[in-house]
Length: 329
Image (cartoon, rainbow, N blue to C red; front, side, top):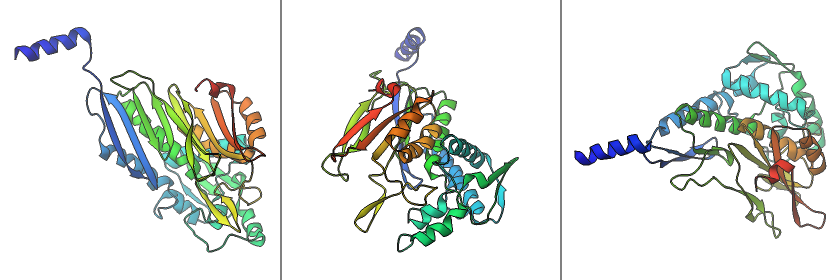
């Protein structure tokens, strides 16, 4: 009893009990997730984390036939949105306008045609098929009235996979913060948001940026190590998700204007922003722009930084970054 009393007095004089590390990992959204946080006691349950994933899937998953987004895609004119769908659709439309349509949430019919969505055709689409699909593409033909999302044509379908994981990461991070957790790292499918330091060392958190080696795109290495302050880091790349067709690599990133996969020198883009929904929402668009255009675009952005890995004309791999991103190395 005396020892406990002394320890209690010690904490009152010195401060909080020592920080402990806690980890929750699992599978969700067709990938894995890892949550680590530092606190004096366990404050987050796996059940609470899985409930957040379930809520997001019920709204945004194109792989769940009962989800709101699936109901919209099957509808003739549109549906009433919940908070999740409305938040992500509004952000996606904002990015659509900012990128001059390079990022377009109505791209799902093309994604399906090229075999990267829920539908899996036996062969890639021919030019006639692409021409038939293109009238169904274009976020300018979507309308929001109150909390209703309406579409101009019944064939229009939306795909929010390029931003939904970032949104989920933000929900999870915000949930941790609601529990007064100020030292954490949340990662879903490689999309990350972090804050604070590691304990008991007190060291800042560091992240490795993966890239293909010079020898083969299928082999990867840790290309750079960064030490970001609080914020989000997301990466888009074309060296993992692709098909081989006619001896050529077909990227999962589809140009909504041409109907064909993007083809340029970029291998991956890593974006740093305050929120994961922003970083995740822009990384695919930057991939589609190509290096020169993406760098010009980023010069005008105040709240984002980016790092680019690309294939040089001689076949070797190079990198470039915005000035603010260099400070993270």
